Length: 101
Image (cartoon, rainbow, N blue to C red; front, top):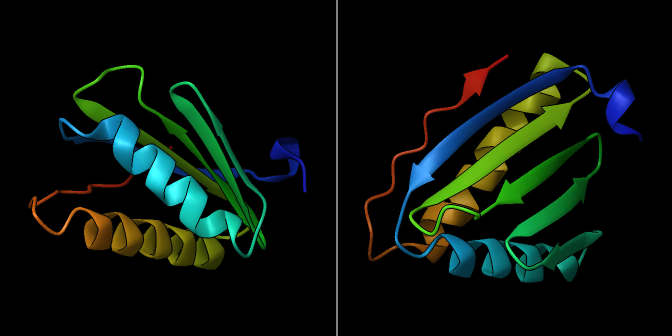
């Protein structure tokens, strides 16, 4: 599925001093079952029916951008990414506020 066919998207910038660590951890975790890549401060996870781009150029914020083919799939992907991030960051109280655009 190409990004052009994923018309529905949301994103958030999550404040954390461990932005790159979580980016790498999320990509490595999902890479066990689905296509996921990372290099430098950027990552991409290809879910069934959508994708998540990750950016840690700002060392104190992890930018998550999720796109999907339907509102239901977008809601599901937002939930999956958020739950995994919070599980990996259990020592921090991260706040994820998805903004749809």
